[in-house]
Amino acid sequence: MKKLKVVAFNGSPRNDGNTSILIRHVLRELENEGIATELVSIGGQTLRGCMDCRRCFENRDRRCVFDDDIVNDCVEKMIDADGIILGSPVYFLDVTARMKALIDRAGIVSRANGGLFRRKVATAAVAVRRSGAKHAVDTILHFLLYSGMTISGTPVIGVGKEIGDVLKDEEGLMRARAAGKDMAWLLKTIAFADHLEEST
Ligand SMILES: Cc1cc2nc3c(=O)[nH]c(=O)nc-3n(C[C@H](O)[C@H](O)[C@H](O)COP(=O)(O)O)c2cc1C
Image (cartoon, rainbow, N blue to C red; front, side, top):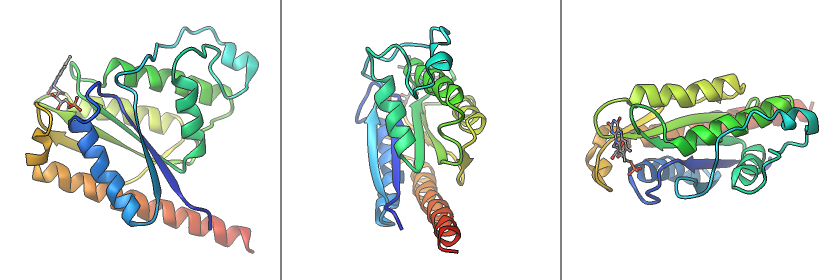
């Protein structure tokens, strides 16, 4: 069977902040299960919103026509992966602007090309100080579901304000580890089913 791979995107400008810590806890469990992982920090990079030019529907080349930021690299990584994790800190009760830009642009490129992310296994990870975690998780889940992905387990929510605070949130870390185990289980189950189908 082919080596499975999960790519995670961190929407925080703090590369080693609380969202990153939560995502890394998920990734560690996946790696323990022999799954390759990659963590991409989009928070400090240039990533603009969708211009609604509809050129992706004309070109249908799996790319956004605006090629001067990181979006096409991100889309390629998503296409290439078996599993996708979107992580964001809560900013004004929602995901960060860059995470929303990734959702809008990757989402429309996917749709213009017949659903590039369909059947991938996915989940959400959110770092929150106090309020808005559910809303931010919902923003991510809506994208995952409307892109035809399969959600594994329970989304991760970790509580913290300053960098590293989330390490004191035992339940948040437990959820992150559980999310990694659940994702590994689902990825392997699907890969095994695909393998059986191919060999019959
Ligand atoms: C612009 C901004 C807006 C924020 N809005 C909220 C909010 O609405 N609710 C909340 O609980 N925390 C809010 N926070 C706090 C962050 O969600 C929190 O510090 C989180 O742990 C940061 O994660 P990070 O270290 O991965 O960046 C906000 C922080 C910033 C900088």
